[in-house]
Image (cartoon, rainbow, N blue to C red; front, side, top):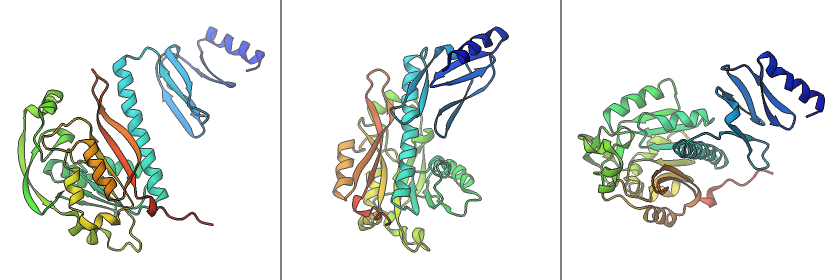
Length: 311
C-alpha cells in the first residue's frame, strides 16, 4: 500500500473510523458496532460484526481467498468451526460431483425435515430429489419443505433389506433410529435416555426405483443415506439395482452409537465391493476430550460412470 494511503488510513481513527488492513492494498473501513463487508477472495464476501483487533487474516493456499479467524476463540469454538467447515466443504464437494457425473436424481434416504434437499437447492442442483422419511413428525416438516418444488418428491417410508413394519426410536431429534443406542451412545448423548417408539413402514429400494426414475431419459441417480446406523440395510435393499447409481454418500461410524450398527471399515468394504471408490471423507461429529471422530460423511463414486469430456 503506498505511503500516502497509509498516512490517510492512519488519520481515520482520529475521526471515529476504524481500519482493518487486509494487506495487498486492501483495507476495511468501519465504525464501532457497525456491520461491514469483507472480501475473502474472488466471489466471496463475509459480513461481520465484532472487534477486528482479534482477527487473524489467513491466506487459503494460492487460491486468492482469505480466512478471518478470531485469535481469542476458545478450543471449543475451534472444534465447532472445524466441523462447520467440514459440512461446508462436503456440500461443495457433493455439488461439484453431481455436476461432473451429470446426476439427475438424488435419492435422499433418511431425509428428516428436508435439510439435505434444501442444501442441494441452495448449492444449485436443479434435478429431481426423491426423499424418504419414516417418522411422522419429521415427515410433516419434510413435506412442507418440498412444497412448491415440482422436482422434489417425498415419501413417508423407511428403507431397508426387506418390506416390513418395524418400530423406530423417536424423540432423538435428527438421530431417530431403528436400532437401540449402544452403551457408548448412551454415555455420549443424554437424549438417548428417554425414548418412545413409532411403527413405520419399510420398503426395499429396488422396488421403488422404477417409479422414482420414471420420465428420465437417461437416469443417473445418486444415493445419499443418513439413517443412524442403518445405511447398510438400505444399501442391501437396493439389490442388483445398486449398479444403477453413479455415486453415493453414507454416514459411516468409527465409534458405534447404535447397537448392531456397522463400523466404518465394514461399511466401506461393502460399498467398495459394489464398485464405489472414495472421493471425500468429512467429519460429522468428534469427541471433545480425545479428538476422535465419531462419524464421517463418506462420498464415493463409480469411476467408470464419469461422462467422457466433450471435445
